[in-house]
Image (cartoon, rainbow, N blue to C red; front, side, top):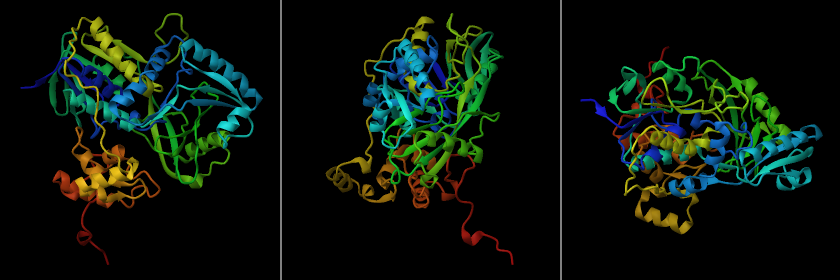
Amino acid sequence: MAEAYDIIIVGGGIVGCMVARYLSRYKLDVLLIEKEADVCTGASAANTAIVHAGYDPMPGSLKAKLNVAGNAMWDTLAGELNFAFDRRGDYVVAIGDEELAHLQCLLEQGKKNGVPGIHIISGEEMRNREPEINPSVSGALWAPTGGICDPFGVTIAAAENAIQNGVKVYLETAFEAFIMDGKRIIGVRTNRGDFYCRWVINAAGLYADMVMHKAGIYPEFVIKPRRGEYCVLDQADITVRNVLFPVPSKASKGIMVTATVHGNALVGPNSNFIEDKDDCSVTRAGLDEIWHGARKLIPSLDTRHVIAMYAGLRACGNAPCRTPGVDYRQDFIVEVAEEVSGLINLAGIESPGLTSAPAIALRVVEMLLEAGERLEEKKDWQPIRPPRPRFRHLPREEQLRLIREDSRYGRIICRCEMVTEGEIVAEIHAPIPAKTYDAIKRRTWLGTGRCQGSFDMPRVVDILSRELGMSPFEISKRGGSSRFLLCTTKEVNHED
């Protein structure tokens, strides 16, 4: 017999997992399905990790409202879910006198959006705050509510807390179609069978348009991916203290230079529309573009310090702003579908989607109540997601205590980031088991240092094989066919 739920969430990115976390507060049977082998593998996995203050979106738009509302929720979230978050503020940096006037426009826009504490500082003050800044800086917009986070940590923490409170998460479960009763949705078809429900929440990211179209609605809505390329710099070679944006263009917020919660500096992204929703390739032209932009802010940046490159895709939709009287602009879609019953669409959630995710989740709760749902709170709902030890961040005494309790914490597997076997094993047996190399990497930051996993990879494969009871030949990088090992060296056929 097919499983039945009150609500099924399609998509395991930051929005889907945050919605699952907030719905877990109520007496509901909730299922989250994700087509990949782990949560946080799409747009949520490859972005700038910025918690935006909210001065950039068009005043009156959903983006503006949910950005500012979501930003205010992050301190509480970080405390409850135990993920890395640093509210260090951010700067929009004007280079030369011509750009200075644009700061005033952003300041006024931020005030209209309700962003607290923003003001303009002088070029001299900016040079004092960031010694590496371009000497031609003429001023900067300072937003003290901006911040940085670990998007993987946030998404995984929200999903784990949802599971802690009774939500089911099925990975490698791809949405295929709706099960309909006339104009009413009564379930979803997946590659793992049918699941029935009263509500479906479409949080499918880049594929949210496809989900809508399967319901026969919104045929004109199309999500076109916008690729952004990035470089990660070795923290031992260069130190950037701050989050630095350029004066934005009509196309994007611009190529920025930012500190990260892991101690590295990050440069990027550019912004280029592409056709393929799976094309995360890094291009030579793209890298040249981001370095040109980054050096405008920090001239001393050197490509020799790059230890990793990646690209992410933003789910850029073509929906107009739906607020009367507000100029046309691509906006979030956060609404109950009118054409069919039982569907909530969360679509076109590009930047500042990460920042807005908790506010979007609260809006979903409000929409369900407005639709007549009786949401009864659980008396035993637990908002706290317990942290797991991160060996490199612990005092020496605590490290020694851990090793005495479990000797696996005394074996360093990743030298660059000082990740232990004990941490890896804990993640393999966590509420969302880390069953691939990339899943371990996302949770522990293993393999992200100077050697980029060349030292730890064989050891991690061995640990995964042992803990999961699988052959080493079945262990993969990110799931599917991305396996590390094909055969033993003795099985290779050597031709004369």
